[in-house]
Length: 227
Image (cartoon, rainbow, N blue to C red; front, top):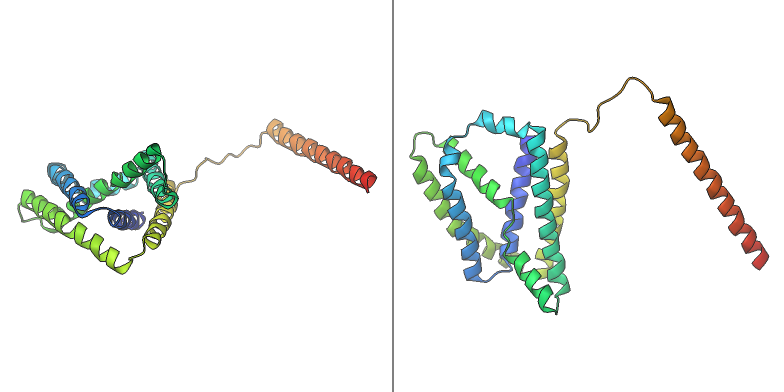
């Protein structure tokens, strides 16, 4: 389960960097500063976490369902961004929506940065945790724009980057389904068969088959008469 979650976080980060390639330099920097500020602000919360607690969270079905809702909203926003970028709306309303979708960094990038901060704190137990938070914030401000420019250099075509964002978010959605299931079945098994329900299903199937056959014969006869 943890492997799936880490893969989702990697995909979220990649999608975030790809989206920044459509922004101007000051917009990239603003997005990076916001992410760094939120990450630094959560340092105290990250200090109080433990690996056991995080593992327990990943095994909690209710929490995974909540995360699945957030993931679905985030994926929907990113796919909508791709569609609006392709269609290039002419009306003012469409351009406003396009701009909003562009400037929304994504709902999941903040939990990803928080998880990264927690892992850094775990790996450097003897250091000042506040300094680690500031170091990560500075690294985000510097590295995120550099990564965006690197991706823009490797993929100069906007259509290729949009297509990649679309595919990545589709994969994120599928991985979210896997993470939500969490090894549990959706319904509990039963040992007894409900006879009334079974008969009702059989009756509906038989009735539908008869009606379908009658309609088929009616259309067939009508076709013969016309010919």
